[in-house]
Length: 171
Length: 146
Image 1 (tube, rainbow over the protein chains, first blue to last red):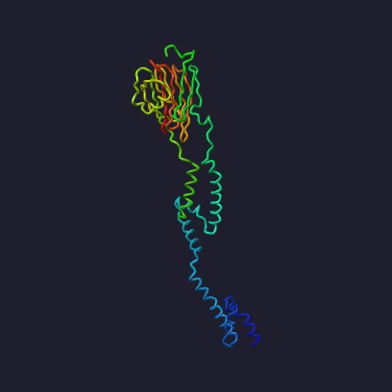
Image 2 (image 1 turned 90 degrees about the vertical axis):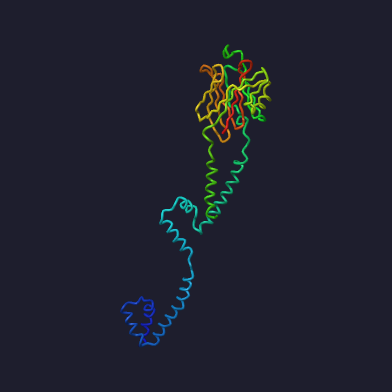
């Protein structure tokens, strides 16, 4: 009986975990009604399972798992064809974990670029005389030409003097 | 608000990357004026130019001979007869946000009497003058609006 009880007790955990073969299960089931010790051990295992399972089940009921819902929502979004606004948004909108990792360097890079580019954007160097000049070029084979520019009056004068080689006697 | 921020960044980036383009057409005004010392009449339609003309020249009379408004497209020359067989040909050769480049040719019988290129900004006037006309001289006043 003792040897039998010892061999059964090795099978008891497998039986409890429903991993025993049909032969092992029938062996245990035949032994349990006649062995109080094994019967008590099985009860103890059941009590232990209950003690562990109940709080876990309760915790699972209370937990909403936001990341699971996020994943489900994303799957739904991917399932239907998104509009172009949603595509742009989802392209920019990264997962909550990586968002900070991306946006912080992006914002820092943006600030650096603005600081570097602002002198070019807002403090342009004054244009040279040629750039400021209204008259780019002037040429005449008939007249002598004088150019006068007045910044104050915002006017430029191109004055044509009739030289010795006049354009024609009729003019 | 948080969700709109990336879109705002995108819009601002596109705005700075592709600034609003200048219009392709430029309205140019050409006035042909006869300036002389005969009489003391100043044409009422030259009221806006009177200050500039008076500060630059010593003529007593300014008479408007012609007033043309030309819508210039890029590299499309517009020709206007001025006086005594001469004509002025104006071509828009460049356009930036606040400046237009105009090539100006004064021609007679197909030959260039004057060939010049000027940069005009809104409010600026270019006066081309000197050739004799009647008792005085002819002055061309060129301005652009865009």
